[in-house]
Amino acid sequence: MGSVFARFSLVILLSVWGISAGLSQQVTKTGTTAAKFLSIPVGARALGMGGAFVSIADDASALYWNPAGIARLGHSEVLVSHAQWIADIDYNFAGVALPLESFGTLGFSFTSLSMGEMERTTEEQPDGTGDFFTAGSFALGVAFARNLTEWFSIGGQVKYIRESIWNSAATGIAIDVGTLFTTPFKGLRFGAGISNFGEKMQMTGDDLLVQKDISPNHGNNPNINANLSTDRFDLPLNLRIGFSYEPLASENQYLVFAVDAAHPNDNSESINVGVEYALFRRAVSIRGGYKALGVRESEEQFTFGGGLQHEISPGVRARIDYAFERFGRLQDVHKFSIGILF
Image 1: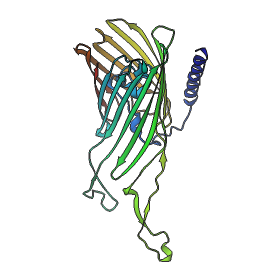
Image 2: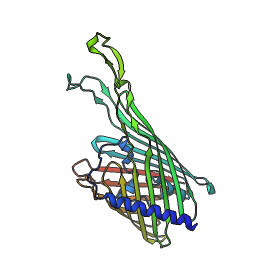
Image 3: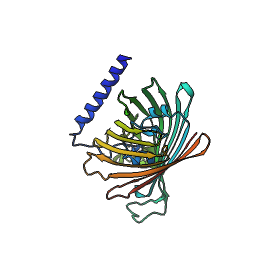
Image 4: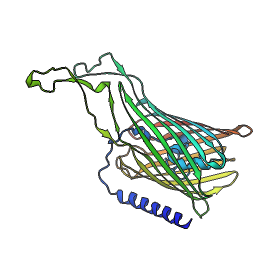
């Protein structure tokens, strides 16, 4: 066990060093990845805390933040979350966590991003052609997590990803891996996770079919079918590490502070901070936080929210959460989540 802890500590130190070393980078690679919807935060509770959730991860939204968290739920849970994202985009998430006694915990997730129909335009018809198209993305995930010891948990998730626009689409497979570590210091937890590790995605489809004369100077057929070749783009890989501290954790009061550091492959390194205070066996909660500290010219700013939890029948509880995110010059975000614990 000592050697395992030593290796785990080394991974933590290397991760912290990598994030710290990257803070001085000037090139952010913003807008260079596919399936960017995978970076949108999930769950009103986590968003209300500024996205500082990787070391907490104690509801079904852990399937996004840190899959190791579902190993510690101790109950089955269904969570549904909706957000009216910027530019009138709908963003939805559904997660299910099913403990399998001592074997571990199984999880399933579905994430979708969709928008209304848009009219197609061309150079010749800039005001519209009368044809309409849609665009959207979704991801399906299957996760498994297990408590290796009383203080250390590990989990992983495999996701199928699809993005489409009109008659073309790109698909891919990604893997999430996370760990949770309860430190020897009372109330202090550490979490780390890597999200969206997988293959590059490339758009293909009928929209890329063209007719081309491969040798116009030699009288060849000018209507030879050909396909336009699109670039292959990486997935939005993200490394998160975080700490949380619970100075209060009694039956009637609960208080937690959390800090996350993120190292994405398509943006600058950043820090999220958050706090949650709950009363009456967590029946009422209030939250606040700040996102993307350290990112130059970021539109993401402060967040706040709250939640209510009620036992609707013996052994069955319902939870409703709300979060608001200030998005600078863009449209502010309102996010809602409903969870059933049984």
